[in-house]
Amino acid sequence: MNSAIIVAAGSSQRMGFDKLMAPLCGRPVVVHSLDRFERSEAVDEVILVIRPERELEFAKIIRDYNFHKITRIVPGGTERHFSVWNGMAVLSADFRLVAVHDAARPLVSPRLINEVFKLASEQGAVSLAAPMVETLKRAGSDHWVVESVDRTNLWGMQTPQVFRLDWLREAYQRVIGAGRSVTDEVSALQEAGFPVQLMSNSDWNVKITFPRDLELAEKLIKLDEIDY
Image (cartoon, rainbow, N blue to C red):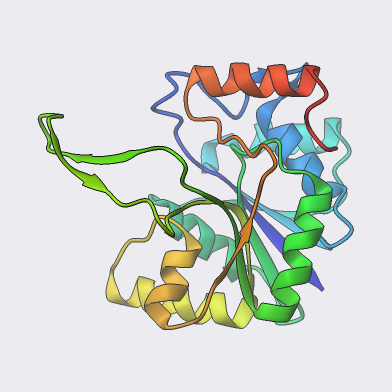
């Protein structure tokens, strides 16, 4: 059996408004994200991690959109890695693989989710990623350019990231126990010494961070550029 933890506990500070509830083609952003996992054949259960004060709001979304795979709503933590840890805490040992996905990525297709799970069942740990194509520069805190950064073999991490549950649990036990912070699950597995394979993604997998991202996602859906 496979599970997915959808992380929806952020504060949307960079957007200036609630990006997860922002309308995207007539439905909130988070509904698009949840729907992709609801329709994925690889996913048996979804754990939704939210800010505690939003439980009633999300419970209504689950009822209104008839999501059957969401079995638990879990309160998030003060940082992202605590939210993922809280989601893992309610998973039973029956689940072999678990995906972690940012609710602010509403365009990932069920087909792509299935493919990541398939590869993870063979390799143990897989993350969607895209090779860096822009010229990269390192700058100081004053925004003056300091040096160029070689982009060879550099990748931008995406979600979902799918792992053997026992690997992810061990990795997060190390992170939490040491009082460290990680920005994604791949970083946690790296610190624990587990190998992680990247799955190159050429599909649109926009993370809604700024208003322009919401505008792009809307245009892509309307232009039928998204694989549903």
